[in-house]
Image (cartoon, rainbow, N blue to C red; front, side, top):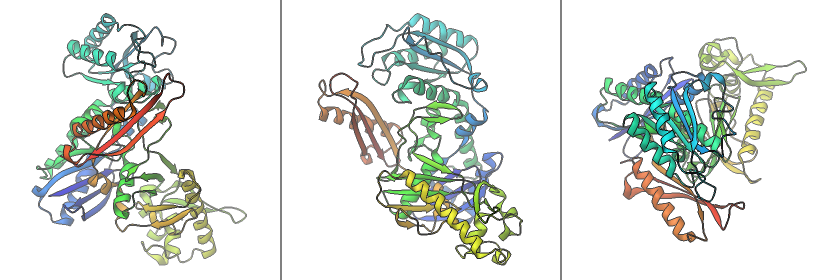
Length: 517
């Protein structure tokens, strides 16, 4: 059996084919097309042609895509939704979608704040106003809305009111309505969790489109025996059905795929990963084989959210970054870039723009295009440019470190040829041979995960009992997402004391992962 991994980026669509021993059989890199599925089809055709593998022997196909991110940023293809907050009277002073841009706020056909919710210790703030909720859902049904976002005060402590509202919504609006509840998506913090839930609800049509489109693309190429999975932003996979329920979890899956792929190729479980593209460089941290999660709220398309996201720093440096000499002799690199037009614009390809790739070719770090076309570049100028490139990366690596100690660094991405193999602050610098398609490899070799998070008072529930329950729940969630139960293992356990809560309250968070079913 073979695995097909595809990652759709802003510049390139990468595809790899991996055998049962997780060895790369074939890999290709194609330009991303305006219609992403044309690019996917081209990449699939190219990798199958290169490998000569029987299409019937491909048993799993994995896709990492930027479709959801693009939909939010570009304000396109978002579904009309209804937004219900359970939290009156306590939260009436904070309007729904309070800091959203007007063009994005318009996705909400109707909104309401009704009675209900909980205190931070789980006590009921107010009874759930079932009749007000029913009236709201009946109004949405009359307006033809097919997706609803439901949030509730402290639903991460108790989700009773959200679950009751979701059941009532399906009872009134029908079983096919898409319901997003905040306790399944975000973390502590009502507004940020609510925002993430609203975006998730608005993305349901996008999710249906790219899951069905990917399946159709594979079928058109004769890949009919493959089970299909989508990459999510913790470096693991989810089934198509799971992706349709939680499309927001695909956001930022590109960097996480690169991080996972870099770890697999280098055999390093703890390192800083530098993924160099044509325009930007993403830096992330691999911890115990999985991407480090961001500990702060993340803004997506101008909306502040708090659902899980990888801890990634992006800098304006890539293979197509434009190199200039300033008056006085100083040299700058980027942040502007020729991007996907590098094969037209770069000097080594016969163009008229000096890029970071030209510097690498001039200094003998890479062989691309015609080296004679960059021979006229002054070596001193080229070395100044390399020093700037080195400094940009070293500063970014320092920003990702949590101590002054040197760290292992892994260089991946098609633009990694522009970086030197020695960096200050790096204990070692690995440059895997297949690093140019690390993102697609990360997609193909990923496992399936489940994460459980809850606040627990250790005075009421003993610590070991609470952690045992959390491990079991995380394992259950991983199996629900598509993992083989017998292969699920706990990969991360956190319990953080919360000083401002009563008793001995801690935030318990457990992550489990297993092989694909």
